[in-house]
Length: 463
Ligand SMILES: Cc1cc2nc3c(=O)[nH]c(=O)nc-3n(C[C@H](O)[C@H](O)[C@H](O)COP(=O)(O)OP(=O)(O)OC[C@H]3O[C@@H](n4cnc5c(N)ncnc54)[C@H](O)[C@@H]3O)c2cc1C
Image (cartoon, rainbow, N blue to C red):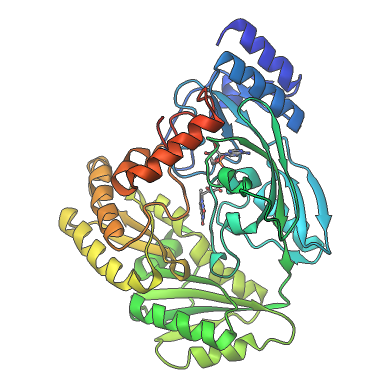
């Protein structure tokens, strides 16, 4: 970057809108698992859409690469500047712009933290159902750019399904105002969808209009012991039938996962007396007159080992703590090889059997910790290193094991990235699993929207 470009970018971001201080930039250069580390000479922190627009116009003119970043909780290295790119943090764009009760719509800026968006909805008597363990740090801009999933997809859909409109700054600085709150709008291509899940490679999201839902009057939340993933899939069908499709979360956890959480996370405990090979956290939400507890009791009457239904909010939170801390507990346990994959729900039992056996044959002693959003067919198919084993030697096998697992996923008609995205982690794997026509179209879109390749270059797809 020339001194002139640097000076222009700093001026465009305003006096409070930039930092060259290595100590301030450092936390933005490393992600949560410390798997990826980057470098950048300049952190830009615009506070308005106009500032983002001015910054991108300069970057485009001077061919300066820029990496957008929200809460830096992404898990595929997409928010990290690996090559000295300028970092563009949206965190100062954190205003709640509007809440339209009648339209069930919440309009927020990209840097609003997910938990703050949930809170704003809740204070007005609504539910914004996107929910994930990183919600205290992740931002709406990051959520939409990764098309985040989380624990309520079964009932409410992914981030894409929760978006009514977007405001996006294009690579050349033009502002694309798609910030509508319409439920019906068939006026040609649905352009906002291009930017959702694009991981910052096609434009910078500066604001979003989000769908709100009625705040449930009550929940039924159960922690359930089952013999097998097949029993879990059967139970999902029964719960959906008994509740009339009101199940919002259906999370699978293995015995070792509960052991890791209760060992590493203070204040957590196994609520059941006897150990079980598999557990579920199931939740349904409904209005005042819906008898969810009765529906759960009927569905749980057969085919389960044991179960406990939360009696109050504190118990509900304690059950959720077991699920929400699974990633953290696995991190504290030491090295792990992880996959974020999906297959059709019906194929989960067979997939788990086959893929687990294949990994254990290649990595004897590895400890399977497969958990996740069973209701969406999305398993975090993870393996912790053998106890007392060589962590580095274990991690050195990551690529090889991932290839083995992804080939099996592909054979089951699944996806190698269910909700975390592609970033740099899976970019070079795409040609193995996507058709030439699909990849060609992705590259064409990238070249069309970002002809100078300044937006998060090298992420998702190489051009
Ligand atoms: C403990 C833990 C649990 C998690 N659980 C889940 C889960 O259940 N489901 C799930 O889907 N994810 C999960 N994640 C992953 C992560 O939280 C999500 O990907 C989240 O949506 C990222 O938001 P962020 O603001 O941190 O984005 P960042 O990490 O900062 O960025 C992610 C991507 O979005 C781009 N980006 C960020 N802001 C913008 C913007 N305004 N415009 C354009 N591009 C932008 C970045 O360049 C990058 O490509 C989890 C992460 C952790 C650490």
